[in-house]
Length: 206
Length: 303
Ligand code: HEM
Ligand code: SF4
Ligand code: SF4
Image (cartoon, rainbow over all chains, first blue to last red; front, side, top):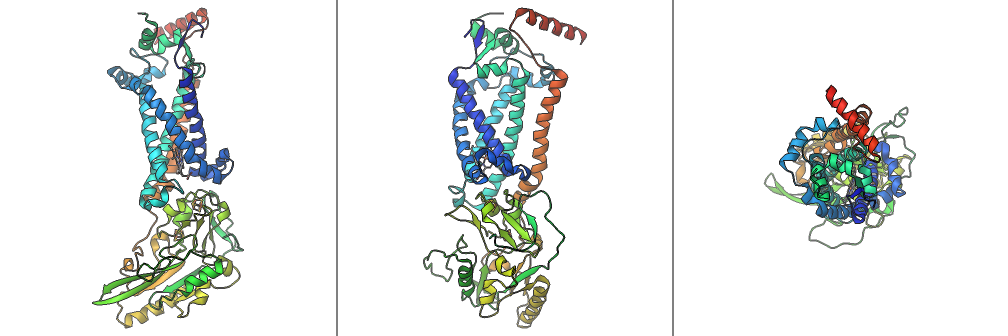
């Protein structure tokens, strides 16, 4: 690491993140193929439609496990504070490129996103297992499977829309993608977007 | 099954219409429950014609055997003992696919062409396109489709579409020794049913009637029931079957909502970027950082 850069994510954290991300892309594409008849051809990400049906749930479980690891890494950084509420209320200003409040490792938007993802993953796992053939669904009542399929589709759509915002935010705030690819950020980036975290990691007062 | 030379009106997961030019008449199978003696000849005929053999099961103390529909048993006789009009009645119903005009299975299926509806009304599963997801099981209001444990594909009664295509009646109809199962145009079958119903009424079955539930647009397998007011008595035949509201929400409302949600997220990002522009803090060389800061200050002054 170059001396003027600040380490934000370690290599294991980055690997963890990208395992989740790749699983998500495969799941979202194959899932949307089941959801939208016109996009059924997207089952091709797993070779054939039948294979997509078979593999999707296994990748889902892998994603859940990898996401759970992330949950235990980051949950304590994501507890909401008064500052975060302030941030959320001022989201319009933030979207103009101005910072609001003395943000720590994560801002209010990132924390909201974190809990949104957690909620979606829980619903996706529970409902996905209920609908999983041939292993689980055969033992469960049909009305329950119906509700599970509806919930699975709703949670998947919510997660996909959230991830679009998540990816866009990373792309919009320049220097952020580098944090998850190379693991480092610049002083300017940290000072601007996460001033309290910047002081914590550098020990600087200003 | 995919042995067919019938016109297709609807395919699962196919957003555009199938060819509609040729019109065929709608057919129907009429099962007169009051004439059925429960001999199961139709079960055997179905197994013979379709070359499917359910594993030999166990006697569970009643006549039901096999006890349920399966990938290898597309029709089963269900025997119910009910007390009505002060006497015990043995109500025997031949269960199987109803060939709904508005089939929930087809609505739910995500795989193009795995479920098709012919213009004569038969709803058929084309297993070569089936992915084994079981959505059809959730879609069906009659609990009919079964996923095979052997090949993970969905199976059910075909109404002998292969026989009907060449002008023959289904195997069960051909075999029934009492004439309790009849086959013909839906129109004709309604006339036959009407005669039978009025006959039953003269014999004291005031609530006799035809079971052709409109909640699923009518069916191409219909029953003459002596107690049409209480179809549940016949081993749980639903009184007012319709595609479950959960499935309607999932396959109906959710799609446009999802499209709006996903598109909104994408469009928001795109227009935000081309209007507000990137959010830079940096960075690499100080002069640029200074320039950025300067630019921002100017902007803020303006605001
Ligand atoms: C957490 C573990 C997961 C499990 C066990 C799981 C399981 C399933 C199952 C069993 C199905 C039915 C099709 C099939 O049998 O393959 C399905 C469909 C689907 N999955 Fe998942 N899945 C999981 C995660 C995800 C994730 C993370 C997404 C994407 C964001 C996703 C999106 C979808 C979608 C959109 C469908 C189609 C729903 C529909 O047809 O309405 N799933 N999933
Ligand atoms: S009874 Fe069930 S399987 Fe048969 S056509 Fe109707 S919805 Fe489909
Ligand atoms: S199991 Fe087969 S027929 Fe049933 S909904 Fe899935 S793809 Fe369609």
